[in-house]
Image (cartoon, rainbow, N blue to C red; front, side, top):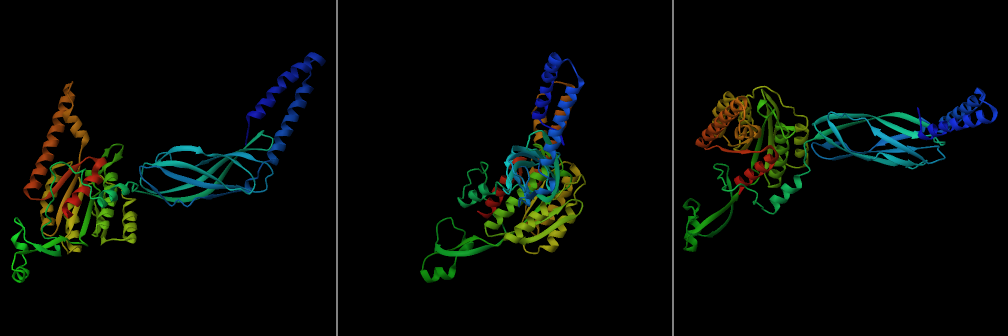
Amino acid sequence: MGITKRFVFIAGLGIPFAAAAAWRFGFSMLYVVIFNLFLIALYVADYFLSVKTENISIERGEADKLFFQTENDIFFYVEIKKVLYELTMEAEDEIDPLHFKIENKKGMTAFITSGMPIEYKYTVIPSKRGAFRFDNIYLRYNGPLGLCMKHVKKHVPLDLKVYPNLKDLGKYRLLIQKHRQDQLPRGERAIRLRGAGEEFESLRAYVEGDDYRKMNWAATARAQKLITNCYQAEKNQPVFIMLDAGRPLSYGTGGYKKVDFAINAALILSDIVNRQGDRSGLLVFDTDVRTMIMPGKGAAHRNQMMEALYHIENTRSTSDYEKAIRMLCERQKRRSIVFLFTDIEDPDESEALTEYIGYLKRRHFPVIMFMKNESLHKMAEKLPLTLKEKYLQQTAADFLNERKKIFMALNAMQIANAESEAERFALAAVNRYMLLRK
């Protein structure tokens, strides 16, 4: 309970009232006491005439999920019963300021009358994925005389999950639908997916340059001219996404952790894979395999992927590539495209990666997506002004040289790989998949 500006204004009128009484009748404490008692009586009356807490009901809107790194609307409805006057009511939701940034609070003050539910809405941007609870809603409103300010706390719990940001899926779907590959890096070529299978589509006359291995000799004999088979990329192709949740993706970039960008990319790639008629699977690992979802598609499969990824937290432990790759090969017998989302921060880790990726290559078609370490590039390119900066520049250059050696080793093993900035990681993964399926 508090006082309003109107109460302060009326109380201030007591000063000239007391001065006038003192000039006309001589100063007397009686006049001050009478005025104060009158003001207190008005305040008490205003308090008892104001809306009772039990006559206020609050119902939250049906927002059971939020999306990471983007604007989300939170809303609730306030209804008042047994009130004969219109009042101004301010509302405030109790949220975690460490993980939610309030972007817009313009809709948190409203005029309310009896029996008319009023919507309150504000916008938040989550800075962390996971499960959260919104507990209390605080209300503030005046009495009918405008002297008393009431403060009410209502316990209205709501459990919300913050999922990876999928609000940009539309542009990726449009990219696929229109076969727009204009955003591909220059010099990229389609990669032949050997051993993954092709489906027969039709027959056509032989054209110089066609592969002789695709000649249809039976059709050639009947037509008395060279006929070749036309194939299309096999549908229902399994595409596994291996997400490294260990130390390599635990570092920050662009205000978020690398693993957050990798998780967004995993969900976006999974959606595009399913829309192309293929089946997507998931394996999340660090020192152990945390989650494994076998390839599938459809709404239920998409929800399963969302539920598996929204709460994934990275660790600072060294990832066990051997255990993850062996489990995938044991569980997934059919040859598949396997996207590995990771990075390189330690020479020992890179040796383990190159050692076991060869084992994966014998059974599947691996594609390694590295997240570019932009801070290293900036440090290596910065002009040193001090001895310390010169040392840091040399250290950064040494790390970048080590990364280049890894890329060269993978290329020598004929293992597809790409490096991308965190903000473009999803686009790079989608483009690489489309090159494989082209």
